[in-house]
Length: 241
Image 1 (tube, rainbow, N blue to C red):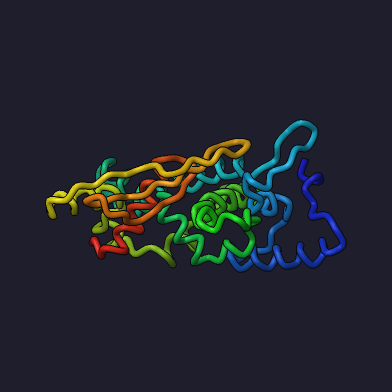
Image 2 (cartoon, rainbow, N blue to C red):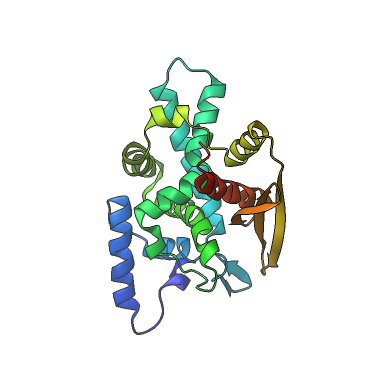
């Protein structure tokens, strides 16, 4: 199947070299099956059909999400030998939530290998975390679980997460906004202002209103993700800690 995914066109060799260098910079190793990583950076909006099957990075994203969760769980289990299941689950959730993965993907420069819908600047930021998960899935298929777990720990967790800060930080931005408005005796509502229908899914735009004043606008492939994105922007705008 992967032979069908080679980069077409006269510039394919140069593009392959550029992608190889980008993957090497992100992961620390040279990819063996470059087609996997090309597919990981493709996204849903650029998916194409081959023999009746629609190729996109969603299957790799699904796989990468599971592998990332397992690797982080293993790391935290060994890091905190005396903490209970509830603590470990909460910290893992804070590390691999959508906002955290989006920020991490930007730090890693994943935006340079993603095939974006150039007309949708807002959604570009949302899909970076999805692409990171797809790349993790590609690493798993390309190099195996042990190499992939080493990549997650050595390149993602240890350089980019201060666990003491993670433990002390509440990353549920929506809850932070709601709690802040309650303390300030203000009203708050999350309003879906637009729903765009794509071939395979919907894209939501949500805006927050505090005392009927518009605040942050968020975007996501689910309403929940769009609300969290809007809440994060509102926290930044109003300096809600």
